[in-house]
Amino acid sequence: MKKHVNRSKLQLLSMSLLGFALSFSVPSSVRAQTQEVQVIEITARKYEYSGSPIHVKLGSQVKLKINATDHDHGFKIDEGTPSRAQGLVFTSAQDCWLLKKGETTIIEFLAQTPGTYTFKCCHTCGLGHNGMKGEIIVDR
Ligand SMILES: [Cu+2]
Image (cartoon, rainbow, N blue to C red; front, side, top):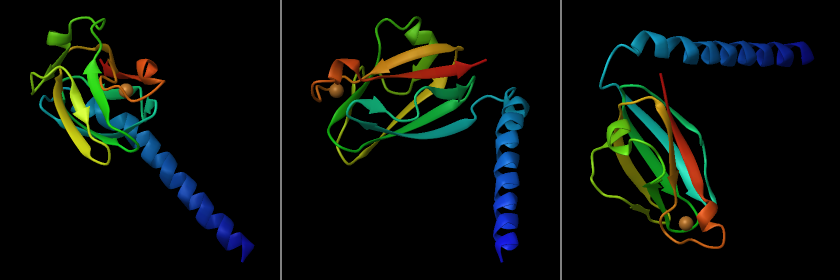
C-alpha cells in the first residue's frame, strides 16, 4: 500500500518536472512570433502584488488581470521607469488604473522593448501604500 502511494508521488513529481522543462522550452520556439497573447493573473492586496516580478515575453500582447482582494488599489507605471511610451504600449491612455476591491481589472499592453518596468499603487490604501510596488520584466 505504502509503495503504491510513493509511486504516484513519483509520477506527480516527474510530471511537474516535465511541465517545468516545457515552460522553458516553449518560449524559445514562439519568440519569433508577434502578437502572441499572454494572460497573467495576479492579485493586489495590502501592500503587495502577487507574482511580482512578472515576466512577459518580448513582442507579446499581455493581458494583465489584477484582482484586488482586500481593498481598492491602483496600478500605475512608475514615472522613473525609462521609455514608458516605447517599452510597454498600453491599449488605454490612462495613467492610473483603479483596482476595485473584489473585482478583476484587465490591463493590456504590448511588450515592445526588453527591460524592467516598475509599477506602483496609485490609490491610497493605507500605511504601506507608498511601498506597494511591483515589477514587469520583458525578457529578451
Ligand atoms: Cu495603495
